[in-house]
Amino acid sequence: MTIITYRTADVDGFQVFYREAGTKGAPKLLLLHGFPSASHMFRDLVPLLADRFHIVAPDLPGFGKSDLPGRGLTFDRIAETIDRFTEVVGFDRYAIYVFDYGAPTGFRLAIRHPDRITAIISQNGNAYEEGLSDGWNPIRAYWEDGSEANRAALRDFLKPETTVWQYTHGVSDPTKVSPDGYSLDNFYMARPGADEVQLDLFGDYKSNVALYPVFQQYFRTHKPRLLAVWGRNDPFFLPAGAEAFKRDIPTAVVRFFDTGHFALETHAAEIAAAIRDFLSA
Image 1 (cartoon, rainbow, N blue to C red):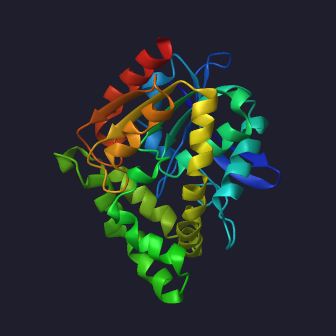
Image 2 (image 1 turned 90 degrees about the vertical axis):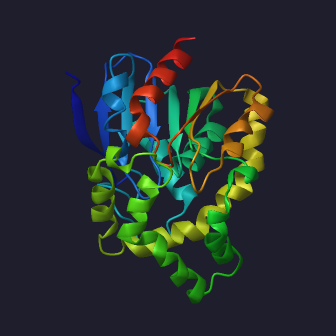
């Protein structure tokens, strides 16, 4: 039976909740979740890898049980907090598993500390323009014109039924998707003020796209070991974004699974096996 502990780290006065499993001294693996989730999205993956790795999975600032900051949260601030978090918990060299928002967070850590990153597993974690689907168009409109009307239009992304859709879209059998994940996401997203923080992050996502050339230069220069495990039916991040990694890292391994955005909900065992094989090679 896997022992998972649930802790909170004080990161310069900011409280970051995290899950930890595995043996200290084993290879370190940092799991970074995406929108609108939290570290609970890794609840099925962690037990499948804890015998091999020392795993830490934080809730990003503004998500889950971590502190909810005030207005003006940016991806730079999220990355700065998680960077300090890794130092607080003693993660000096580690592989990163990045998903959705976790990707621009983890890639910022990589360009800041390339010597600390031992490998990258990108699960629907994009770094290329061709990986962005038309589903981003309403958010792009807000990048170009930050009007109240364009901001208000994005509130549909925060509705409970949209969260359920993100979990089930592209899944061949939705009955295999546990309601626990999206129900907990909706619970945390209903915290007072969480909606405005998330709308701010929608607006700031343009900073991630602006950094794509910097991320790609890091890939070309440092050639990190990279595994892309992708739900091919993702409505936001297209398979072309996974294939693009091979342009900058010819040795990158790309695996597609017949599922949607939250691939771990249906394919945790297959993804865990791919990670074990990849990091054992």
